[in-house]
Length: 452
Image (tube, rainbow, N blue to C red; front, side):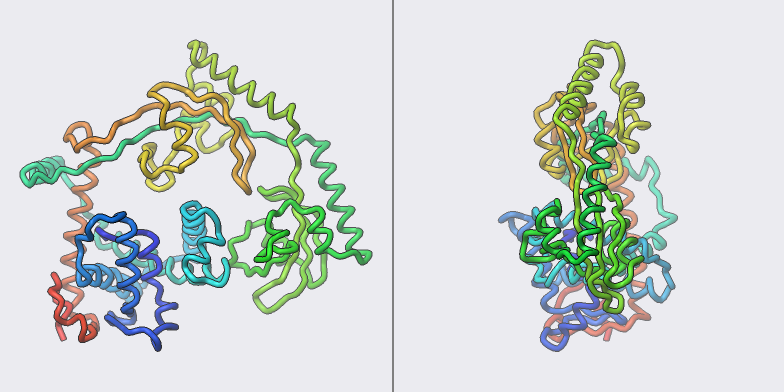
């Protein structure tokens, strides 16, 4: 989809919400079993305008509608063709998009508020239906275009046509990074202290002390002192909730009123009590205690990495060999320390779209340079020190055939696939039920959607 954005399109594709709102919202189009609402068009257009940041929108309402209709057509035929998807696939996509929304807006509360949901659980239920349809679309599209490829001659012809039309693409500045990581681990004595404290709290609660009060006094969960979900350590969860695996496994292994033994997660160590079982839902309360890393341990890890950095700079060892020998990061250690872009799954990062914290670390570093050791902590993951090397930096530029061949090849392939999907869609229109609201029948569509 040429003009779509993640946030806009995700919320347009929801069949569940559409069905619930149908009585108060006009139906723009019906395609098979799928509908597009008038409000979907407005929402999609608003998102596009925000993305363009004041620039003129170059697509009409009818053009927006036609793009949405094409996706609904693909989704309809994915069901007819019995495209298979698993619960795991859907939940993985939901988790990924929740993480993306939270990163973009700053917090889960802001995400929930911006899109008008009651809470995170409500948002996840909505996203489940949306992501199911997105996966259907993706798999059906892949099936339609699975045999499509482009030859070098086709790539060259595609590029020459762009040159003739004076329409060469502009590529953003890109960077390739490698890292060496030193993970900070609490001492055995500190872990024993945390476990002893949680067992002491467990015994007190079993003797009649208030779990909620114990959570307020002892828990390291920042939501404990809030007024929203997590206040007093209490949450309502289902097996589909976005809570960490360990938390759900323990919660659903307990009976009502039962308190768990201490258990570990990426956040630290917990105990859980099941307050109430309500069908598929459970009201649970937890206390989280995070083992502390001593200042001496932090200083030692930072010093170790800075000394390793000096060895690399002095030529005593290569960065690649140092990453393999000393890095604690499993994903990059055996790949010469190279960081993979999670959005594209390759080693290049678009400087205009990368994580702001990472951008601030490397934007002023030259090719071949290595940062000093710095501390990084991601909630629910490890605490660590890192050094990062800039392997390559490419400035923003107009497309060049030899320099950007792989990118141009991908653009040529995508164009060829779009043409195949367009032809497929024209054929499928003949045997698909389509009903267009009278307000849109006058649209000058590229395909024969107005066949009835």
